[in-house]
Structure formats: C-alpha cells, structure tokens
Image (cartoon, rainbow, N blue to C red; front, side, top):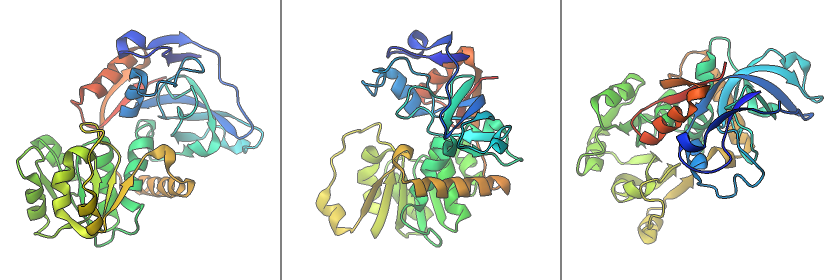
Length: 328
C-alpha cells in the first residue's frame, strides 16, 4: 500500500517520504479501514520533529492519529456487518507505528466510529483530537448548564469545538481571538462575547464581556503564558482545563494563591482520557453530527504526495481549522 513515512526526525520536507509498504495485518478485535482522509494535528508535527525520542525505536512511523474512511475487512471478533461502514478513526498512531497517512489502516474496532449518514469523510477526519479534547475540557468536571466559561483561542482547532460544546449544553461562553475574521467565526457558532487577547489587560475585557462576573471554567490553549491573567478572573472553586502550554512549557505555579481559590487544575490529552470519557465524547459527537448542530473549519487539503506542505502549514501557526491529507 502507499503511505507516508518517516524514519528519522527533522523538517517535514527532509524526512517525510512516500513509499509502498506492506499492507497491515489484522488482529481479532480490529478492522481494516480504507482511508480517504487523514487529519494533521499539532501533536503529529511535533512527533515528526522529534518530541518523543523513542518513537522510532521499532522502525519507521506512518504519521497521524485522526482520519476517516470505509471498513473493508474485520477481525474474527468483529461483526462482518461492519464491512462497508463509513467511519471516523482516532488514536491511530498512539503507542504504535502506523497512523492514518496511508491507504489502509488496521485499528481496534472501538477506535473506528460509525459516521452518521449526513456527515462527510472530510468532517470525520477533523473530529478525533480536536472535538474529543474539547469535550473533555468542557465536561470532565460536571454539567456546564448555567456556568460561565472562558475559552482562550476560540478560533483554534480545540477552542472552536469547546465554544460549541459549552453553548450546546447551556453555558455562557466568552472567548478570545486576535483578528476580525476569527472573531466573526466564533460569534457565528454562538460565542456570547469575543475579546482580543493581544491587548493589554485582556482579562479585564473578558470580565466586562461577562458583565463583570468571574468565570466558573476556563479552557486554556496557553496555560503558562496566560496564567497570571486568567487567575484574576476565576471564581473561588473554579476549574482550569488546559491541553497546551507551548509558549511557556514549564510554568511556575502560584501554589498558595491557587490553593486559597480552591481551584481545580485539569490537564487534558485524548490518549489518557478514561474510556468512559472517550465513549461519552463519541456519543455526543455523533448525536450532534446527526442533528447538524456542530460546525467545522477545514483550512486546507493536500494530496498525500504533498503531506510535507500540510505539516509546514500547521507549524506556521498561520491558519485556523483542520488540515487534511487526501489519501484516495
């Protein structure tokens, strides 16, 4: 089968290659998916660049965790009724070498989720890491009905879904964006207010947008960089859920201040989510897909031969929305 691989770390143009490799074997609890689309996430480009030094210990890697396609074969423990099913897949390249940047994928049947009939394969390839991360950030600490939520980076891949999860389940959601285009995108999906986080004392603008009331929940894309600002506008007993701290990866935490706020700090990554949380996210995602209540942003699509351009676009941090690789 045709696949993108890398067998050393480095820049996308230097290390990503298109090769013909052996078709995947199937275990009893797995399905074979003929992939149509592969989603590129920031974690994928970080892996390729060398963020995990042991990643190549067992040989080359086919990148990417998210994708979508059609089941063409099943293992002995999986119903053959699933053959022909359109699915979105997640967590493909986790603790294993083979991800979704290939024509075929063998994967645990629970990681291949049936797509609603009204949902495209392009949308399916966007869902895994962004939509599930956002779901966990919003719901890990209970119902959000009637709560006030601040989402930083609302136009980003995770933030865009976090706004929608909050609004769909009864919260007031204020978010941040740095330009008019992104601001309008956030308003279009229901954000109650959008403020510019590049402005000085932006947290005070967030407070004003929420009519002076502090926040119950924070979904934060830049935990370390934002902490001194966000702590000032969080309620006693509030929760910060964060999934990234790229600008300041080793932040100093004001322990006493946070302790006296009775603050809960939650770190979120899809791979470590409890299975129940994954299943809850999948259920809500598919329900809202079926009712056309979720919006999606696809920034750019590339053919498999141009996969390096997709990685470079993610690394440029110049786009909002999903980057897809066309496999078929």
